[in-house]
Length: 116
Image 1 (cartoon, rainbow, N blue to C red):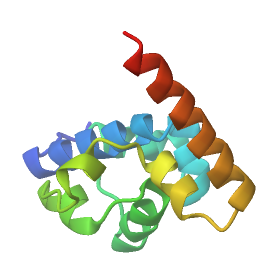
Image 2 (cartoon, rainbow, N blue to C red):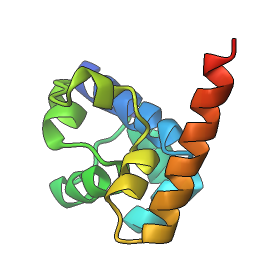
Image 3 (cartoon, one colour):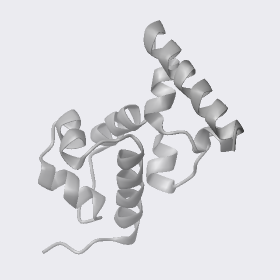
Image 4 (cartoon, rainbow, N blue to C red):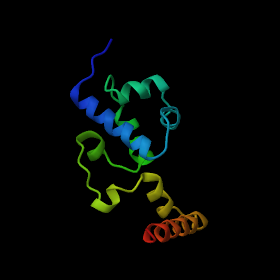
């Protein structure tokens, strides 16, 4: 059995964290990357590493960059670092209907929060 290395463990933890923040299961992410679920699981546990092509695709899927995945350096502004990738994707998408629905839901949440 392969032994995890410290850099791979750190990368794997960041991948798992971002995957969860984006509401994806390992199976979903493995499918998007065109790899086996076993390989995805091993990458998240630090037993193996993904190719540079897969890491680049992963950055696109999880709305992050290689600096964060590999080195843990988060260059997003502090407020953006706390926003899940799928929310940022909706704001940046070309789908005006989804953008408007997101805005409406956030306004409803704000009204509820303000009434505490």
